[in-house]
Length: 281
Image 1 (cartoon, rainbow, N blue to C red):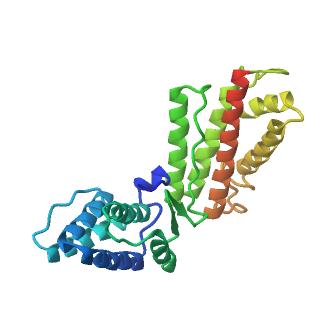
Image 2 (cartoon, helix red, strand yellow):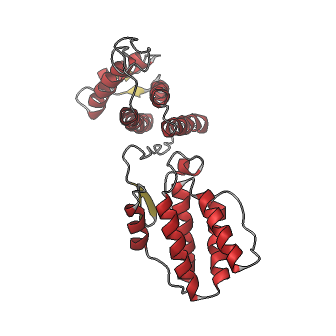
Image 3 (cartoon, rainbow, N blue to C red):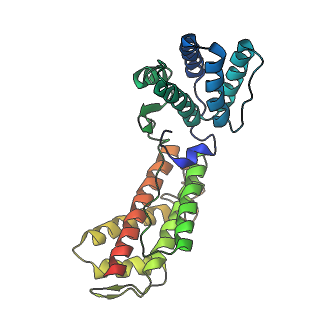
């Protein structure tokens, strides 16, 4: 099984597999099937593509029908490119383990590149080559946050990724900006070497953190956070938090939304790590 962003398994955000990839992979399966019982090998691939399509396959009445049914399952699985690629890769690897000659990764990647699928197999990972489609991962859970807080963080990041995949750029940035402000509340009452964080709201909380950590990386990062937060809050800037200027405002582009989401995610990851460090201290 290939490793990739789990969110790709549940919607078509990553996009459909190009028709050329589907056609050439089907032709490769036909060549693999010359090495043994044709129907048995076709049924093998059918099972994997049916699973990728979210269903199960039953044995066809003949090799000819197995071929037709396989094409149908591949068509359904093709709605989600990562799952389609994973199905073909896994089916081949299983047969390879049984001594059947199958296409290697270099062959698969040539087909994926030929039709500009946007993906490359680097076992055990499936890599997106589209910077705009690249997912942003959630940070690792520190001991300083309870399960409920962690579930909220995971849910919010997943929602932002879903919104990006749907082209709802402004809403995606709003989601992670809200999460950034929410994560900051974890610092209320945290003791630092220079005193206790007294603020109750985002600007006050990060203001306290910055004053208490002058000359450190945390101070510098908070400066960047403040600048980005201010820009996204301004109606004539990012136009995210307080609305956008009706005359001067510009809709958030997909590339900008991805940039903002990735920046904010990195800041959230850093703040969570700092919260764990200060809590241990």
